Length: 288
Image (cartoon, rainbow, N blue to C red; front, side, top):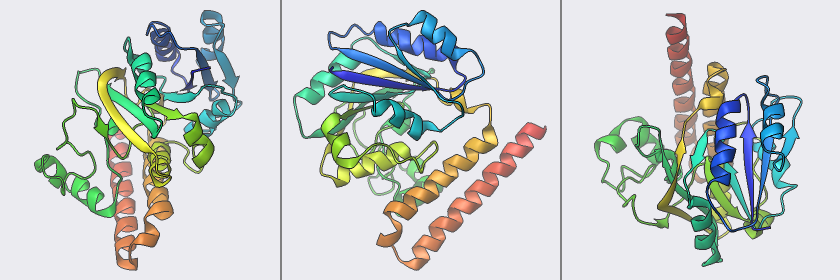
């Protein structure tokens, strides 16, 4: 088996069906198996997926176990030389799967590769091309300095928009919407960290991949379309909380020991303030 594709579904029936169909339409000659892990959807997803795509391996959970654990459930059953995490709200363009497998086959030092991720309006989903969220990079990003000076390497350490986005190059971090990882890499560093319910697990995985000495590449010669946030609209406060919780966890796991007490206090305080403002904005918006 060349490739195992894992799609986590949570009440995104229509999008998931379109996503699976786009995989079949992508015209690859490689051996591919597809897993759909359903996190207790209430929209009839499972029955429709089984009926329309009988060859897809469906794993049904009795509750929403989160993105990391759901992916790990399928990963532990998969047999591919590569594993592709693919969001349910994506459409894979023709040739994308084959080109990424071919690219990784040419260099066995590559641990993971992502493609260009395009939003419905044609703009780039910047999450597919990131540096790690160090305190410095995060500060410049949150304060808007990174956006104001997009071509400055120091100020734009998070999205790294100063790099040529149309040329293949190494990058720190990909996005879980499309992330192909080598089997040997997974065997060395382990699967996704289930401490992350959703958000942050892809950054953590990339960090561990790089720490182990593997290369991570951004390949913009092929692409997917990402209808971002489709499965997270139903519980906005939960999503806001998990997003900020992921920030806290990632810093605590990977950066806290590298920085002094004052920097860490500054980071944690910043996360709490940002969470509070986001919750207030959410309540105000929904209460209007």
